[in-house]
Length: 349
Ligand code: UD1
Ligand code: UDP
Image (cartoon, rainbow, N blue to C red):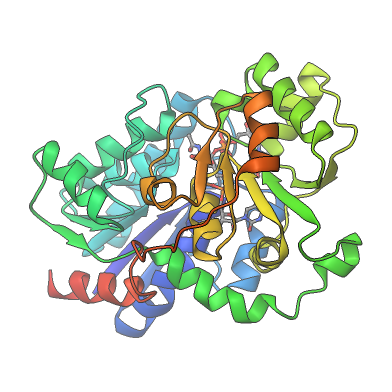
């Protein structure tokens, strides 16, 4: 079996590391990096730490408007697929790299598999929502992480090719947990375990609105517990553009996955608008304060470990002081062996 994997953004490197590790044992795995994320600490560090082979193709698309990026990717991915003639194309998540990969494949009649299918925020203003809906409808195999996502697909008439595999980010986290125990990042940053809150912000709806971005940074500055913020390049750019005051927040560069998991594992709680980090917080038993109005990972909220506060300063500060989960967590994200199941399903297809 010859598979072309399309990746390009930070969370896709984490997910692909797990599937690619298994895939390489059973067939030919061609890695295509679109170049959507390209900074050393947004890209290369993940390949090095997670032992992902160097990409066979680096399309070097870089940043741009949605149309510009997606169009360049589509054109360059098509060239690769015509040349490689794979048995299957594998795409991950909901980024512009995902939609470009699935669209290129489906137009060439190459079977397409989508990892993290069926997730919905029901907010069509999110670029990711459009990417994931279109990708699901173009895919032959849909690797679904949760039962809720299976139901979401059913409501859109998609039942064929749907496989509830569990979430390969759980596989990744289990792999990283042991390795991250030796990291010195806490010491390097002068942090004590349980004495800081770990934050990330990068969602376009938060970063590109000056008022909302200021709200978030004001809440961080007034937090009674120190906030540590590995700053996403998009957010860095917008903080500079709007001249947002970041006093009182411990800002660091984005870190590699092992350091990030180490920071997650020792923090007092997580504040985020990321998708993947809400799940990691849950899986590590950390309270999560999500600066969005809705989430795709509804299980984390239903179990009482995640609270949706939006980019609202008062609600963020209230949650920092008063939101403390008490209930047992269920196990909605599988058994940590999702990647093996996905590869077996692809082989059977
Ligand atoms: C993208 C995904 C988002 C995902 C996130 C993961 C889309 C539409 N969005 O958002 O779903 O959650 O990745 O982190 O695909 N930049 C750099 N260096 C880099 C990468 C980006 O400086 O290596 C800056 C550029 O100014 C760029 C901006 O960040 O314009 C946004 O990058 P982009 O890839 O368009 O979107 P993300 O916000 O990273
Ligand atoms: N992550 C990381 N370093 C950081 C911030 C995040 O390694 O400085 C990891 C994190 O552990 C998770 C993934 O990146 O696995 C989440 O990516 P991101 O929040 O950028 O994207 P999303 O999940 O929202 O699409």
